[in-house]
Image (cartoon, rainbow, N blue to C red; front, side):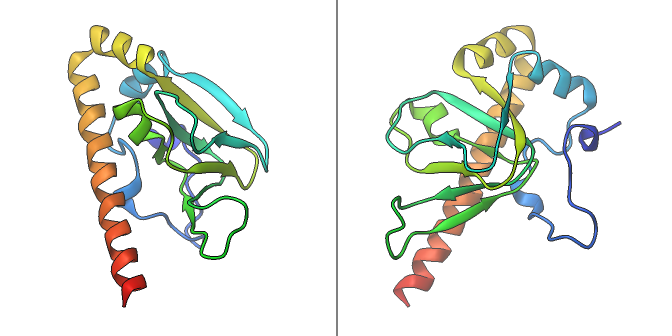
Length: 160
């Protein structure tokens, strides 16, 4: 059984998230169990804020179910960019790496669930399964690269 047992992927007629944003999509059920043994489940309701811009928190959130969105500018300002976060993806990777204030707010569009892996949980995973922990870091780096490329494309389009 693959990761499909952990994630509610959209039905074929629904909008599919880009494969490049799926986090650790090729991992076995045993690997997911090992990761989730060090991560806390967190349910959310529509309208909840999971990550608030400016707060310091060294954790990632693996999106198990539900719809989230990243808001790049708060308060409904014109020019605010809202980016959907697909089930099976991860959020919070920048703060996880640099332990600095969050760069954006993430809010729930629907009810759902994430698994929160903080730095201490990651360190425990690294002690118990160094190869899996290394894979997780490379996957976070890959997701960061994809999002940076998407941001660059957005800026190029905005600048004309």
